[in-house]
Amino acid sequence: MHIPDGFIPLWQCAIYYVILIIALYFSLQWARKNLDERTVPLLAVLAAGIFAIMSVNVALPPGISGHMMGGALVAIVFCAPEAAIIIFTLVLLVQGLFFADGGITVLGANVINMGIIGGFAGLYSFKALRKPIGKIPAIFIAGWLSIFLAAIAATLELAWAGTFPLNLGLITMGLYNAIIGILEGFLTVIVILGLEKVRPDLLAWNREKKIVDLKSESNEAKSK
Amino acid sequence: MRPKDRNLIIAGIIICLVIAVLSPFIASNNPDGLEKSAEQLMNNPDTQPVIQAPLPDYTIEPLGKLGKIVALVLGILVTLVVSYIIAVILRRRNRQNHQ
Image 1 (cartoon, chains in turn purple, cyan):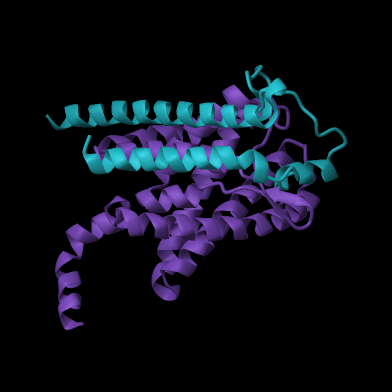
Image 2: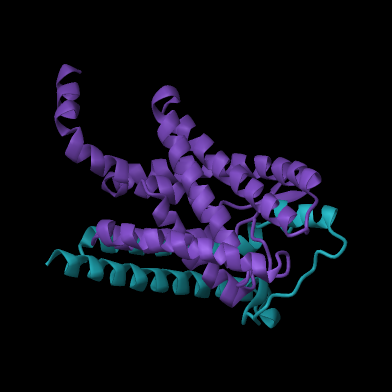
């Protein structure tokens, strides 16, 4: 999913950087309001975990591989796509500066795809689907959609750059990443359920619930 | 830092290190979705990075798989420390705003 240097002309990279800077401005506003002694370690650990998990490429048919991305995961855990934007900016910077994975000129485009689009798609599909279809299927679809839409966005950027033909690009990128998205969906479910089991207080949805729904929750418990 | 949060960091580091040690042995060398698409759609998909990264492709050449593990561990620690420092700076600004 990492677009490398040279796939997008510099003037278009500059446009993506401007979008990234605007997104970071809002994300830092969010961070000032929402980061506390509990969420600072969580953010750092998730960033390191995403860096680590991105190295595990799983072989998939037809002769491709995919790794977990984590955009939906971060956005759902924090209930904020802003957290995904901050984490992906940091992780992609480290990957581009030290390991030539992705690139510095295309950083803006890559954060837009994986952090902004992946984060928004993941969080809001989860929120919309959680009640009608249940928590676990909603997380799975959020993970799948975050990869799929990030890939579609990357294809549109590469088509605009003249690097990929639009139609064929949408077909191959859409198909391959629809397969990779299944892996993302499964792993997002596993990580969130694991985190909820060990530290339910770290999930933003549980924290909001504590304040807002404390009464209704205890009433439910009584009626059961 | 509360013990609970310290434990989270320790557990996180352990999980990341396990992934780093296993990754060179279990990761597939198949191209990912974008690389495969580039192979199929472009005449010359090999481009050079703009800056010289010290450890391209997570490798330290003469060390083989051990080099990959070392590169990943370094990357994990850099990511963890940088993210932690930036998050702490953002939180400090937060605290000042409330005073």
